[in-house]
Length: 237
Image (cartoon, rainbow, N blue to C red; front, top):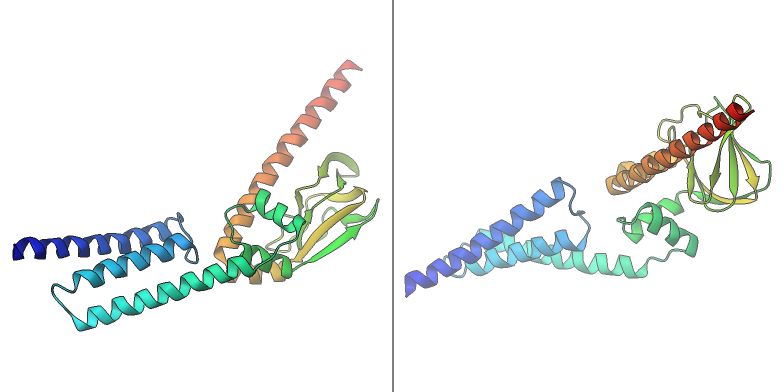
């Protein structure tokens, strides 16, 4: 009976070790975020199981570690809950988060927008000039803009598109000129502010890079469709 009882506590301890390993592995391969509920709960469960297993073969040092881990996890849960429920986004910011960075926490999205500025652009406003540095990232929330290369319009951007996504992190020259075609509301963030923010928040950088890659693919598809359409018109003429 005592042997069975001891084996049960050993199994509980192994479950705790399994939770520790699972939490760390999930974090390293990007399945969970270090500040997310899942990672914190996995660590809380791990420490709790190991602590329970120690009641059969007590070790003070190990018990102190597990109790401390539980306390830190409970603090992390409380902090995460308060941050998520005290952070507010405007309707346009919430739409950005939903469409561009769906896996990002509200506090991270809030920090992104706090680091930049919302601006209203009028018709015919030049947003970028081909070959000139933009030194930042622009998000076109509404309206539209024409994209030009060598003075020729090669595409059009609409609400939800990025401008300067290819050079926003290094401040290099833009690849095309962008001119507002219809009054637009845009969000601007400088290269310096963007890099500083992403340096402190890898999750934000990863989410933005994913959103910008998707945006670039959409633009390339639209540009190819426009080019094919123009070729058909030329062939018909």
